[in-house]
Image 1: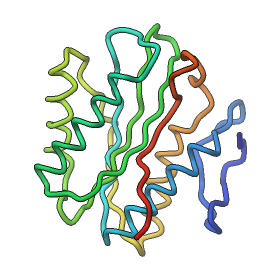
Image 2: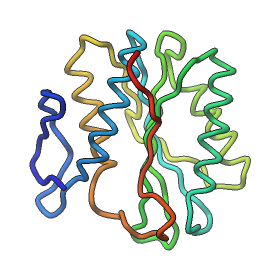
Image 3: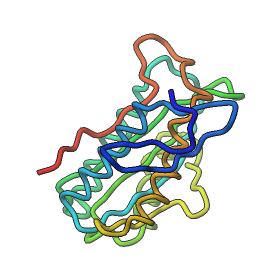
Length: 186
């Protein structure tokens, strides 16, 4: 757990979204950075798309989200001829009785230049299963290049919200609070 407003990961100082009352989980921040870096090592430009998924009913496990990620990855790879799809998600329960998920998808921006069709694909899958319309935050996507440290910092700061302490831990033992793709640099 870190309560500082910045963190040093792999000799890179990054600002994070913390408050005085709560910190961020370092493991989630590390995985976020590793997946951003892995995608940028494969592609000169990436697009990071952020959204929230709400569910109708509480479930002990993250089965629905796992199924969603598998289906989304398959459709994205087929539609855009992608070789890899990066992602990170966190599970939270706060005031509602059922969990919701914060999700970031990381794609090759040389093939996906704008998120509109990706959002539409996400809506089709998620709402096709009878789930509520996914929430898209204002300014919900970032385009990163290997050399644009300011855009990288902005995206990381936004994604660091997913590592916040609040809302985590309310789950069955067999469920995870977060997960991420396991992309590695070449």
